[in-house]
Amino acid sequence: MTVNVTAERPVEITGTAWLQLNHITGIRQQGRVVVGLTPTDCDGASYAYHSPFVVSQTLASDGVYALTVPFRAIFVPSTTGSVTFYLNAFMESGQNNGDRFWYSNMAAHMY
Image (cartoon, rainbow, N blue to C red; front, side, top):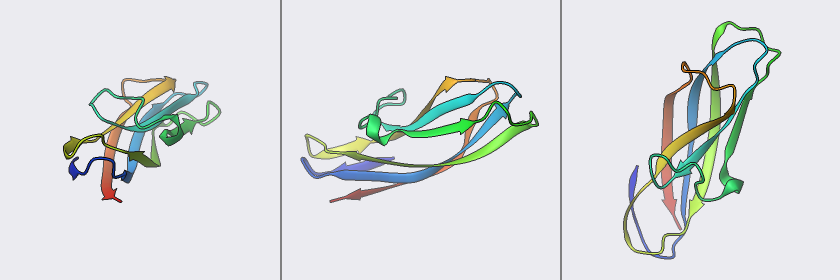
């Protein structure tokens, strides 16, 4: 999402990500959703704004688990102009090639 911002005015990004995780019994799947400034930025605004998610290793393996993960981040741009914000995620454990973003929404509010 690209937003026109004003230098030194906080921008709050909020939304919800819907994830589909291909789960296997006995494997804990854990990760975080992050709003970043590049397509690969998994640090985002700061660790305080990481949105964690978990699928317990004790859950039965029935293929795909759908998770809803709300997220929020605040950025304070140093210059006025257009800034593009990216919704990213990373797995800390249990990554599977079938894991993916399913849908998401994002909104920006400048204060």
